[in-house]
Length: 413
Image (cartoon, rainbow, N blue to C red; front, side, top):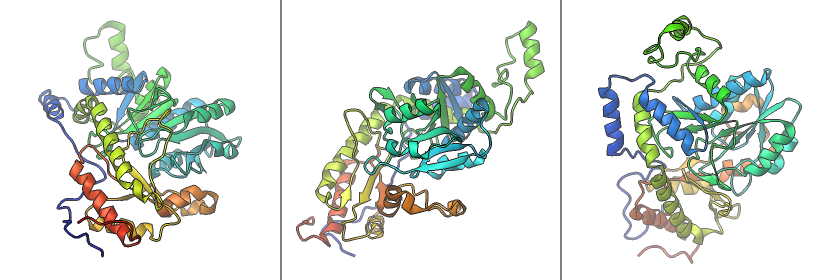
């Protein structure tokens, strides 16, 4: 191992994410506990409303994970569209496994499309070739904090009468041509899991501007219950015919559903986090800009984040790096070095090479960009918990590593 003279190893790991709970969030949780109410109530309703509004949508449904949000989105569209088992949903060949698993869970077939070599999102130019008579939907995944190139995707969906699900679990609060993430899909899904952009511990949201979809989504997340009784408050302060209907129907289930509910405590945290989302995004974007500057000198070996800043904003949930084919070292060489020096890394969401999908007989050669990313891509953190000292340390560790291969790279004194 090559060490930099005078550089000490970080005493704590510089993680890919952070847990940043403010005094406001703590006070909200204590208020929820003091109310003696953990089931769906005022905090959940407010969080749903404010989150949907922040993403230019009318309705929000708060559930226990982003995966659950995706699951109820697929179930809702399958029901309303009368899709059949083995109908197809187009999905990018680079994404987290949850995107594909929810498709399989509902007896539908994922059809993979390769990604753009610079943004890492689904390549719109390759979608039409994947469409068949069984195609019903495009699941667009906004990866690493960057909204996909939506204009051509929406045009394709309109041409073939396809629904759009936005998997926006890694991207919130940012815009594409002035429109917010989450406002493009028939249903859009977000995650508030630990280390995401805003954090509730566990949690996720499905948002939509279609009232019928919103009612079905909420029902599916609540065991398929009749929406006349969603909250324990729904049979209070009413009388007459309405009261009799609620009593009659409050234990009525009208479709197969799931138990995907979250609690008031998570929602209480989410409200405070959502209020801080602009500052969280600003800090991440600032840190990412610093890393882009600090690491740009290694451009001949590293491909860093690239996107059209005139039409897209980047939330930078993480900082993606892909090693160029010309590099004299491997991904394993660099990743193991960074981890040894307490800089946490993660693979850039390898999908088509996962053991669980071996029975699908996916050929990596059919998805050359995804295959390249799987073999050469990883990410590090750029979250709001990182300081200038962390950024300089990261630069020093990279510099030390590269000095082994290029005498022109000067190590720290």
